[in-house]
Every structure is written in C-alpha cells, then in structure tokens.
Image (cartoon, rainbow, N blue to C red; front, side, top):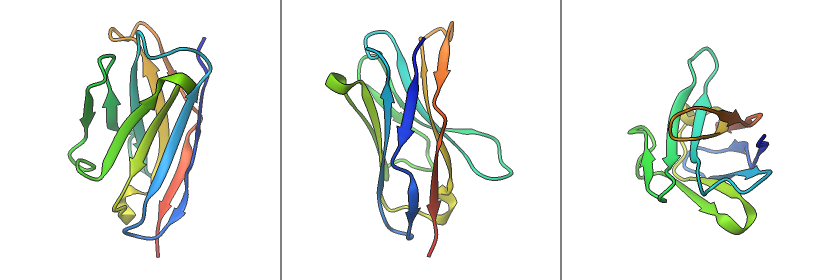
Length: 117
C-alpha cells in the first residue's frame, strides 16, 4: 500500500507560480509511473503530466512549456512546478502512482489551486 500526500496548493494571481509536492510513503520510483491530474468544478478529471519510470516527462498540451514535473528520489517526492498560471488552471490537483499495466494505482487526497486576481 502506497500513501500519497499532496501539498503546495493555494491562491495565486494570474501569471504567478506554485510548486505542488506529492510525497509517497515508500520507495515508488523503481517500478511506478507518476502522474498529476486535475479536476475543475463541473468538469471531468484531466491528465496534466507524467513522469515515466525512465525519468521521461510528458505533458498535456494545455500546460506544456508552463508546467514541469520532477522527482526527488531521496525523499520519494514528485513535484509539479507551475508557472505562468492562468485562471483556467484553477482546479483540485491530484497525484497518481501506478504500475505500467495499471494492475494497481494509488491517489492522493488532492490540493486546491486557485488562480484569480
């Protein structure tokens, strides 16, 4: 069982930055894919970014060149650096950990990001 705890959300003005953290309860990077998702009010949850086992990163078109996913192996933490934030980035952001075949997956509790002036 892996527990994921997100932090770092908050209120930020358009154009600002935030860094989200997702700390796992165990060593997760050897066999797991790490994703960030988000869900805005009244909308379906959408995929935002991925960090593959190899360390390769992928992003949704809506956040490409603004968001960066990274990891700290020593602390079992995944980060999402969000720059040039827009009001449409407002959502609850979730961390997800799963094996490549989705035989198991774990979710964090989510952290709220609000972009507003």
